[in-house]
Image 1 (cartoon, helix red, strand yellow):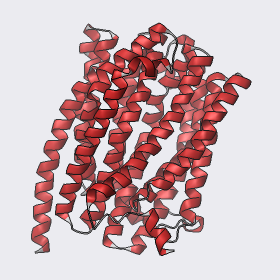
Image 2 (image 1 turned 180 degrees about the vertical axis):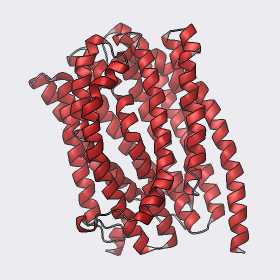
Image 3 (image 1 turned 30 degrees about the vertical axis):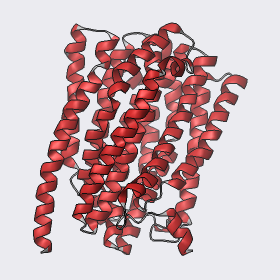
Image 4 (image 1 turned 90 degrees about the vertical axis):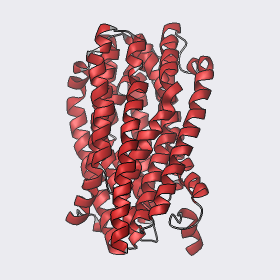
Length: 456
């Protein structure tokens, strides 16, 4: 039993960090990339076998979905931080209370998002000026997608709990199985039953049910402190407040970030369905590279939380440097590969020359600079790990979100073309990254100095 337990967890408090960060981050990146790869099958199947309109319908819903779920995904980050911190303190009772509070939030938020998503799907897509030839398919896809929202929340919160003990492998196993089923159902429902965008949405819901069921099984059969029991599901006021204190700023940041992307998608919709479809194709490769940054973001917040709870401040500094270096290096290498091979990669998703051209333009403008995102993602994660969640949220809201909205209504208004719209991403990354790094070093210096004096 002890050997099995050790094989699933990582000792974040002792030993060399380099290998442990990779062991934590790479399965997490693989999980996200695999999940996106199967989502990319949605776009590719519809684009290859149905129409560019239905391909655009699947692709344009991403910002809407993210806008609605990011608050709760951010709260799951809060659960990760709180549980990891308690593990560093070795406080078993608080760990159990936080685990059951987190999963209660997951179930409640999932039901809320299901109802809300079905009700507002059409009005939101109309407000976004979704092209008329895309709107019908987009509404159908979005309504079906939100039927699976309770299961998406259970998976996200459950995976966050497992990450708090260093286990990123079992969430990967969940996605491998559910993703294979998703891909098979995509082809079956589109090619055999000719369901188009509705078919890939149904396949996605079924795969989310499977991944949520697996993550629940893993947690309910745990032998350690994070074991989940449905009989103990409840909201602990103390742990709810602790989770929200970290998670809400992160969630609000994600929501405002997504709102900015909704505004960009709205501007993009005005350029026609070919531009929307081309952007949807290129976005798949951005997700692949961004998930590497996100994996080291999660590594930074989890490792930092445990070590901060254990008062190992010098180790926290090393975690930041390693996560930043590894995130930028691996992301940059992947991005360069996609840019250099863009002719081949785009051809996997579309045979329409106009759509392909838009996709290649987006890849050049965004993937070339995608590694810069590590500066504010890892910097913000390290701040959350030491209990400062509001500052990176505020900086990111202004540096990335508000800046992008202003760009749309100023620069893009005077130069309304696809290239101008895409240029907003790297410019905003540079501004936000510089501000978050400055905040990180200033806050870290003050916090560690104050705590060191108290320890003495």
